[in-house]
Picture 1: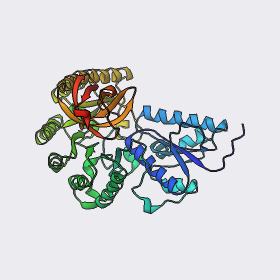
Picture 2: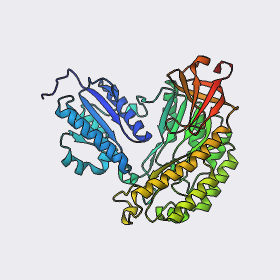
Picture 3: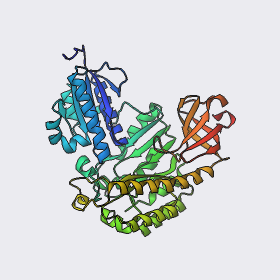
Length: 440
């Protein structure tokens, strides 16, 4: 079928993978808009003629989702539904030469740091004066806030350095200016992201400078919550805990992927930490910031993980009682150090172990949530649907953590505003609540 003819370029940006990709797509969209090019994010109407797919290449499932999405749009191009298909992001950075042969319908492939080249292909100029500006794809009251790119860690399972390059921090003054721009647009919550927050500043300031950055961001008028994601445990900068405790708008929340509880597995993972040091670190964090919610992620079925390692891991999880936890099965990634090891844990055993981890955590989460019943919390209202307001406490990040469900019939709340609520019921994943004094 002959491709439809469009009067002008309209771009549909498709984002796959993590919040870092969301951030990158938002930057790309702002640049396109500034060049007078119409752009939408995951458009519902099929009135665009160009598709840009921002891919993920982290683990096997994410890679397959990205490939399936590319193939779907390649088919749309063959049917004449779009004129151009471009692919960017991590999968493209890592596998473009192989993908080009298998999916010739794609017009061009771009890596994770190829935005200027992508814009040029779309007949747009990279505008340096727009650095920090984005078209938000999240609700207007919160934004992912990337403070650095790349990673210098040597974790044996991780391909991120292959796709994102070495660690590069964004200067403090630029980030503060970006935060002011976002606050002026109505953003109330900054969710700080990076491959590793704790490495921030080592390249620019020759020291870990996360605490100074967060302190300066907390001074930005209009920013009411600052949330920290993706902190590495080895070399953790303890001074950030003082900022967290002293600044009321820095959430008592930390996302710290620990990957495993067995020292033997941690050693093979090249994590630079032991079970005992991890426990001591978590104890110190909880002591210095009472009531903090700690979120972590774990990998099941890493090469060489024995049943004894898994049972050690389960006992450790039970002791640690993390507020939030996600478990993923190990993905054998080429060009990583772990790829030299035998992927010797059968897929069904990986899945079973991940399931056992989540079942254990489910019981812990239920107990911790039920302890909140009867208490009053300040929440941020994210959206309203099906007669219910959906909100979050400071202990919850969007999309991955608990939600607070508030009946709309009990009173009016405004999406994007804070409210006081009392928790009335709790299950493993969600809290139910009623607004207190009208909620405002």
